[in-house]
Length: 238
Image 1 (cartoon, rainbow, N blue to C red):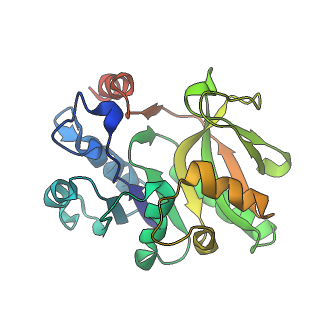
Image 2 (cartoon, rainbow, N blue to C red):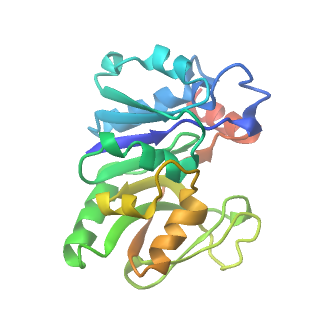
């Protein structure tokens, strides 16, 4: 299975720490954050990666190259202009074959990736395959207002997303930034347009009557997109 990493954002919230480099290259313990993600994927036998890059992308390409240093294959989907999380996934479509993983490039969730992928495959085989378009890894937090929460219905089907700062659906489950997605999911994203997976595509899929499942899991989770999150991850790995 391929993994797509969304690593093209500006990183404005982390500008005080990485003013001269893209956020995925934020140095933590002597190596960039993105390297931890690549090592995590390799540990779980995921070795064909697509990096969605944009802002200062030449630095990412120069550091990671073809991925051979980590015994992985890396392709680059380069955005001439920022396309958002959804637009970046659509822009990388030509590199994707079959069911694929997608990871946010500014968060880390140390879940059992094999069990997550197996859950998606099992649920897909038991349901109407054409209706089941993806599975989102979820984690529980005390206060979901900084993230936006996810509410589950029967059989782990996602029934509602709540935006950041409101989290009004009463759930403490949040999107942990790792997804298993089917090729048909890409049909819900317009080409060459800035689109948000979280705010636009995921809700649209539900609105059209298709299924997204949630997979609540335990494990260390952090969003390194803020100085606080950056410090938490640094303390975790050092």
